[in-house]
Image (cartoon, rainbow, N blue to C red; front, side, top):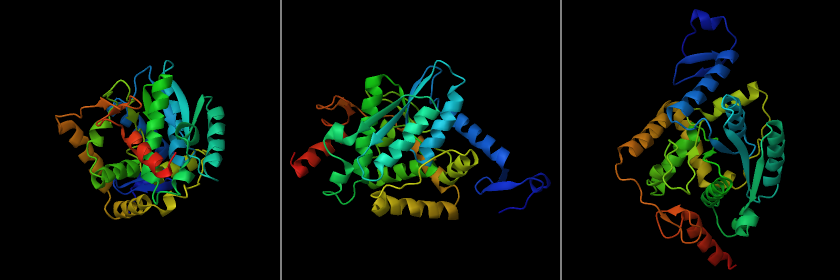
Length: 306
């Protein structure tokens, strides 16, 4: 940590941001978080004055902070509408506990809540999947994204807001490399560009904030959130990669921002945008005859024989 200046030495400091070389007291920190999110939304033109925003909330600290901040920001735009989406994966001892928190949040913020369940939509739960697949995290993510898009499109919402932090977004970019899916950076850009009428843009207003900053903000604002961690994530490859990313960012501050800058440049400088067809099963956009979700579902149903 760097030395304190005279002004800082008189304050009760609570946080030091290494990559900015700056100390914060409580008031400055809360103000900085609000401004950071507002600037991110403005810079990427994430919303219109009359946007219909579906906020994905699962009760964890990131989604709760996103809900809190968007509720504050969107009060200035009375023609905008918001709703909460909760995806119930069907994970025993986890999904129901999260849903109870989300229901309370929906009441607290006076927002409509839409609950979509794996069991109702696909005929199976993640618990069932785990009996057939060693690592279910990537499968779960793809199917949840399909469910969110399906819900948003059918109820007429034009934005899906996710509580993804800097680490989350950098991790997604890295995994696109690992899985040779760089085209995904073109399909899900940072700007809410609607590449297909049935593909609802995804926005990530927390993408320039670190998870520890989100956690501190939640505690300072006394926001209720779940600390439960998905049992399948605990033993996943994704957890190991994320932990290593946290470690490297602490040692080399700014590394994660570099990944985001690369992804943004890749989108801006790639002249050929992906040609999207429509999945022959669901009709949603796809670069193949089947969307990624239905390619998975075909494999799952063959494997599980139902």
